Length: 133
Image 1: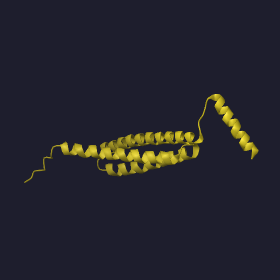
Image 2: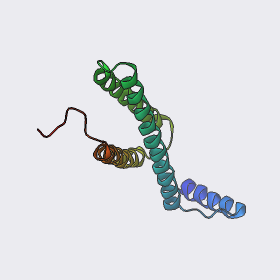
Image 3: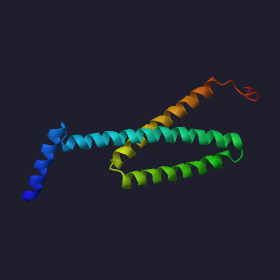
Image 4: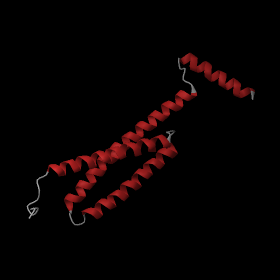
């Protein structure tokens, strides 16, 4: 028991000598913020990559486009699970903060994408076969 107290006192002296005065809760908060930023970056990268894959799949083959989009979704899902698994095992990041930030921002980006797509459709002229007669 005495060695723990001595180690703690020594750590405090070392932190004071280097000018560091960070408590345990500040370190946890800092790590949580870094984890959230990592989740946000992953969400933006995932969204941009998903949009690129969907556009590429639709332009290449319009018949097999939906199947390619679904296959791309499954592959991207496996990749993000692998990335989160690696981050959870080999980094001190708060994986819950990473996942929460990822899910929230990715959902917002998808809502924004669908909204912008729908508002572009309203502005499009009607097709030639769409006569009201």
